[in-house]
Length: 185
Image (cartoon, rainbow, N blue to C red; front, top):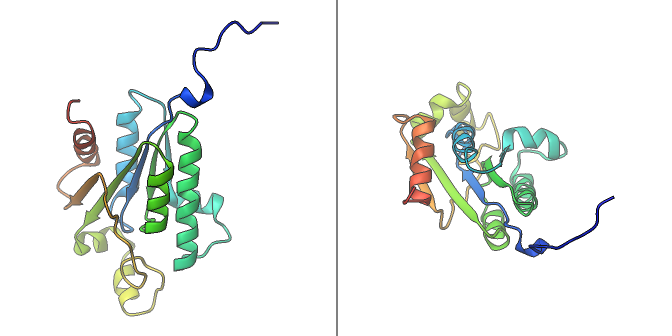
């Protein structure tokens, strides 16, 4: 059995991880960018990648895609990112979550919070989403599509804004994000 010799750092001194909150409309490429950014960041530190499309069935089976439930899920994602990052791991989270309440909460509670707003031209989004979804939402045949029949709240002060026109790969965009966040690297 061992014995305690000395403590070099208190739990409060242990470095918390960063949170990279990738947000944008459905179909903009958040999940693809999250995979590329996680791979790049993971070369230096442990990274946990969270994706709203994969988290919703796990955490939010009782939630609909309506506005109130989307807001609740955004807060859940922000709090999950906080918990994981508080354990010293970096988190890359890809989520629509265009909700000021969740963005403000994360910025106020997560010490190293980086918001990345990914945008694309509506024509690019329409090509990436299931065929006819945007037209069906505009015609009222499909409901709860953010940016069409659900209001969105664009980030107030993202660290990075990327307008994706489809001409760059996810790896190139991840490199742009890293260059913007750490110009010296």
